[in-house]
Amino acid sequence: MKKGRSSWGFKLPVLLLSAALGGRLGNRVAAGSGALWALLFALLALPLCEMGQMRAVYWAAFRKYRHLLEELVARDIKLKFRRSVLGMLWSVLNPLLMMLVITAVFQNLFRFDIENFPVYYLTGSLLFNFVTEATSGAMHAVVSSGPLIRKVYIPKYIFPLEKCLFAFVNMLFSAAATAVMIAVLRVPLGPQALLFWLPFVYALLFSIGLGMILATLQVFFRDTAHLYGVFVTAWLYLTPVIYPVEILPGWMLPVVRCNPLYYFVDFFRQVVLYRSLPGLETSLICPLFALAALALGVLVFKKKQDRFILFI
Image 1 (tube, helix red, strand yellow):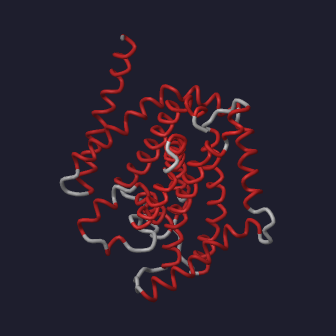
Image 2 (cartoon, rainbow, N blue to C red; image 1 turned 90 degrees about the vertical axis):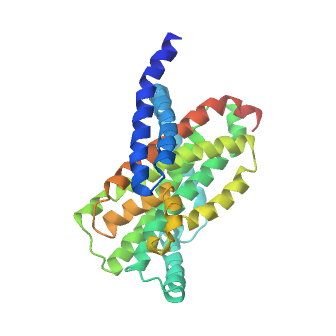
Image 3 (tube, rainbow, N blue to C red; image 1 turned 180 degrees about the horizontal axis):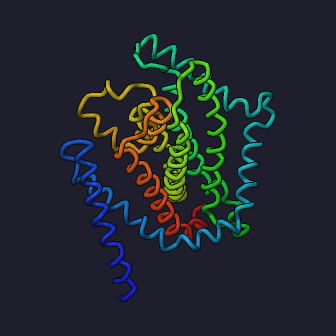
């Protein structure tokens, strides 16, 4: 009991501080949403407290199995481009070809008046495609690795983590397409562009956390993959990848701004496309969403992983 009281003696101030911060930010995002954001931030603070208590155990296991993780990532890269003539060049060509199609449709038919629209699209699709690829791969990672898990001991979180890292490597190659279009369109860059890697890190941490939650759900409820496919479609429309935020009606802005990818994409565009630093709101919410999702994912995965063997 004494240990429990001590633990909550640390957690309670964190929860109160998170609720206060959430309320302040919520009032800035939309009038009347402060209470909702305060509750959200307080709930997300709980897994952050739990993660602090178990980081040493996970870090020791990670160091022990890091070479296996590297081998699994290398294997997936080789399998993806096996027997492909262009190989990893497709990671650059694919976003460029999609950009040509999207630009032709939305700039000519829908007449979106967005300066440097090809780069605008690529900066949004780069992060969105990475998050959806990473989380979708992580979702199936534990189930598809069932035969290996039943034979030898390997920390189960290695499998969803590997899928996220594989998608991250693939995204780095795809980022070359954005660099090519920046050069072709002669988009001016400022010193703020040196921060381009920050939204990549935020998106990676967020993807690992969400991927672990999805991997856990998929073990016990196989329809998760079908439901997530529908969710990803809705998620795309709630993320300003193609359209400008200004065209949204007022009632929809608070909904879009509850989307973590909205902030990751906005951060990336601010430093790369608009040569400015993100505002205080974006600078705070990005790491909060990333770390909270990671902590929540690790907590959920840790609590359920001992029962995986019964269902895979």
